[in-house]
Image (cartoon, rainbow, N blue to C red; front, side, top):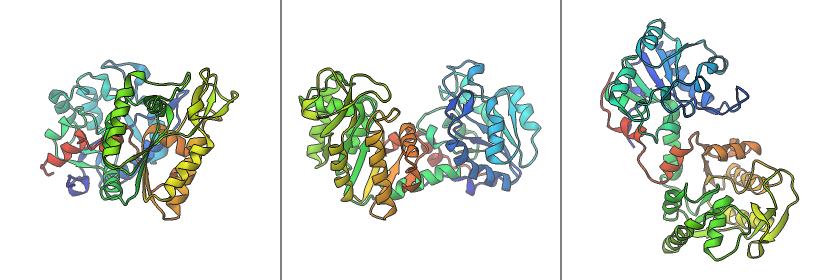
Length: 401
């Protein structure tokens, strides 16, 4: 894959518009996970070493095209200064006189954070006029928001029509690792896919059965596959209207010699709450008054045996309701197993998605995976084989600084 990189641009003493993803999780007004901030730091450091004037832009939440103080990025400056080790100024708009004046006040090596891009509805419309207003603020553009590059938004795609553009170090790392590990993946290859609904991952599942030897399913989506095999799932989360789709995916798996691995036994309870009484049942005998909240011990051991024979593992989504105990056991046990096999050199492992990374971090396993992607939707669409608009813009843009 040939794409333009920021390293190939002359950025010395230039004003560089840096698109990051600072849509970070926040609890009680404080950032609860610094991953996206920290993974942007190498690009910040590189640009500062070039004596570039750095104009950082990002979205945050879903303000729906209006300036809503609840979604202002102004609260982030102190955190960015602490994590990046440099002062960070703030502009209360991302276009117009306010932004232009703030950019004009920058000196070489200094950093400015612009207000939330999504305060303007034209951002999500990929409006060229809005993109041109953003482009007026700089001499060159760097995209380092892989996790937002599946969206054709003005700050991701259209802006590259107006400035010399290249990928930041994080996007380079993401693409290089994903292509190296999964481009010519060693077999056997397994995909561990969890989460609540098939409907949100239909394209992913349909694509994976053509590429992997084992598709290991957990979470609520596994219930729908069980139902598609005429196995009652009690009061569990299930999508009855997706049963036909599940059957189609199973038929496609058979046609491509992919084994779909469903739970053998499950951990059930009467309600979705922490530390409630739970029971282990075979999937063939799930009580009508209980709901499935995790995979059981036999299921865990079955998957562990499969993973012992694999050379590559992709992971997206937890095996159960990992947020509450004791229904985090399945996810935790499998995370430890993949981490151990990776560290022993037996397999290569890639994981992505917010819930997935949070689950792996809970067991301190993420550091032992071959690669952890910062992306959620972009990671899934990349696995689906889709062209990401943000990456396509860098592939086709041939301008030079």
